[in-house]
Image (cartoon, rainbow, N blue to C red; front, side, top):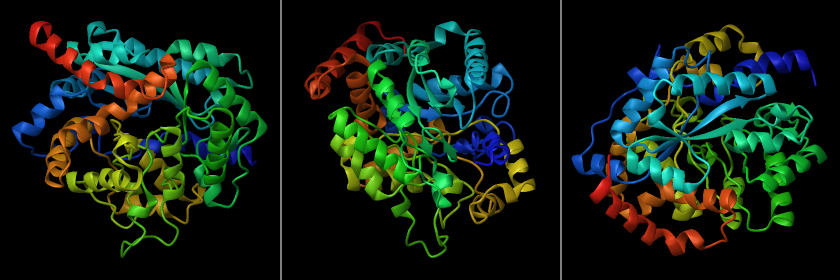
Length: 419
């Protein structure tokens, strides 16, 4: 497997799931898009769950960066974030290092964070104006051949996991390996990992996974765990950019096909597009616009239905070191020069959810979306999946309870709310 090359590549690609920033720190320089007061109020009044991925040491390096990011997010009304702790070939020790760094920083303002184990934790964070933290691992290599660690991972609060990230691993193949014709498909070890994930209520995340490996994983879930949702936490639709005049011949290896996305509908899962500029094949904007972000959401809603779409900016503070490394070591990336070319065009950032979502809201209203539809996309669809997998709720329970839960939250806010 050419381990030396793989390790070097994955050191960088473990961060490039979120490669999109301007100079330090991106959270302070990301573009703030104008929006109506009505849209701002809607974002603040409704639960919103995004995805922020910024590894300690290569994304953020000082606790104040992390804390400032979440202060601004809370002020706008972002309820919670999925945060990635490990990726690619990283091991258990690196997972622990990342986890401790995040927790140590958040401990400086302990009253501002809730480490979500249930949807009640998310609802509580919304009511109190706190940040709900949902940990994600972008790799299964943290298990280090020991499936018994799955229980500990769940106790840590890791609620979703990717099997394979970009390259070839014991569990299967990632998207970059698949791009180069090396998709081995899901292995017996990969199936064993999935079985343990289901056992402990950890969501199967198929972002960054090679198509054959992803399809095999979905086949395994459908055959053995029918009705248990699986998801793509941050994946752009390849079909949206296929006909762009300047689209690359083979497209961005990170993006997923309609065939893959459609599989989540049967399971009851969701797909969240990531507002990542360098993955926007044929466009590669300097600043992704609310219209372009809305295009991604709208594409998935038309393809999958409003019940199977979520949000994920997948942004981080600073990837300038990573971008510099990638440009200096371009031959390491076997993607026909796609990624480096996108960086050279200036597409090296992503939207910060707090600074773009109100404007996206205005844009989606213009397209005819209702408040109820936006509430599903902004968090409702994720929370339905969370309730089913984390809490063992039967299919349909979320829909039966939803209006009542919203009413209770509204009444509570009127009487006791601190938000």
